[in-house]
Length: 341
Image (cartoon, rainbow, N blue to C red; front, side, top):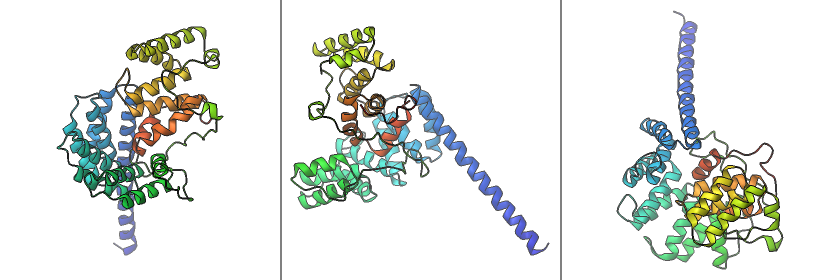
């Protein structure tokens, strides 16, 4: 056999192996997306089954998704210890956002004995890797002297690093400290999101909208329904929205959530915003920041001013991975992605 023929055989084998590896990756990605589809449809049990099997196959994104479901008790019995172990496994294998999850659980004593020192260590690992959320949380520990020695200078340095990446909570904390924001501060982005792998391109964020000062207050669930709001919805929708507001103001937040969720499902943007606010506050329903982000994105896409104001606040509380989950369940109307109020 000539060297040329041997070379062709080796090349053919290499190509076959590469094709096989590509097929495996594609097959896993397809299954992962099936989990997203199940989650979108509210079939959390199916999502858990899909992602937990992928987690057993060493898929780090699936490990974190599975841990999220275990931590929240969605589609599976709530098991904070099992969630912690999965987060930790994914973190030890390099998933940056899982490092922050591990730190959160150590700090809260959730699923593991409370250990602020261990929490600080995991926040530091995630912060070194560039996760702004972890940088801010570690800065908070330095400011409080929790798990680490009290050190304002180190806290400020961490906040400035996160602020330069456009992370809103870091910018707010620096302002509170009387520190001028770095001039090179730029909007944050996440084109390499660990939920989806290195080839995932995050959906574009809605463009910021400058509103008149009198309209720029952060919305709250008990805000009055203005004539403009009422005129923008059908008569029956307006009745249900008012019923929800009356219930909320009377302290019956479960009833308010039920009324507004009914309208949110029909696509009423003001209802979507108020449902998001209830999710964010844990009023009338379980607190769920991913759901809050999801409903705000839908309302903002339809030009709801309150949603545009609140969206950055909620987004800032989520890791890039959690925002990706919120994006995955958003179904925007055609052409409405960047419609300002």
